[in-house]
Image 1 (cartoon, rainbow over the protein chains, first blue to last red):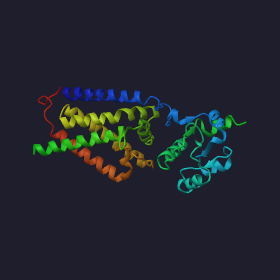
Image 2 (cartoon, each protein chain N blue to C red; image 1 turned 180 degrees about the vertical axis):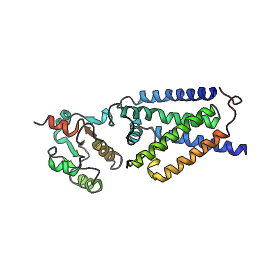
Image 3 (tube, rainbow over the protein chains, first blue to last red; image 1 turned 135 degrees about the vertical axis):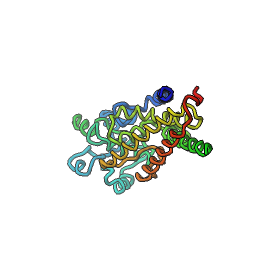
Length: 143
Length: 149
């Protein structure tokens, strides 16, 4: 029993070393609080300052978008991804513009998922950021 | 017969080295993968807090690689089999729990390649590996006689 315990502890400990090195290597990407890396997010103030250089995407369900949304934002959610993505690409997308994606609040995952699909599936080269605090934060600072 | 078990051990070890590496690096082109992607896969099970998902995303792939190497080279053999068995049991349990709660999961067990496997195939593969690990445990060399650095 003792060799088994000793071997297990050694293996468990050994795996900690490369994991720690990897954590250091990715220290700027890793976020311990949120599913989205800090470098992939943008504050409301900074996103606003981009003005017409940014396209806003609302990743919330249709009903929330219809109730209210950021002016000039376009609806692009995962429920109707295949239908809405071509519309976005034809009507609003431009390779030079930054893309700001938002959902309801800090805790929602929809914006992060849409941002990731825009990068990985649609392969958009744009700078794509998720709005920190989402729609709730935007409402607080609405002027 | 000993050779056959040696080959099974090599294969199981190789599977875990491969499974771990697919979560750490992308080979075409070569680059280190963002651990946040695997952390999101773990988070999709809706079992653990986000911070623990990140810690596991950093740690589990290396644990798989190191235990896989231990199996291949027959060093710390029993310890590696025990850890891998525990990992498999926890993973199978978490997968079934997620499925019964209606959560559509991508397990991320083999990095991007996982997306091409159905849930049934995942389970079948996992049970096959569990069976191999249990058989290897049964046929393992005596720890007192095995070489332990």
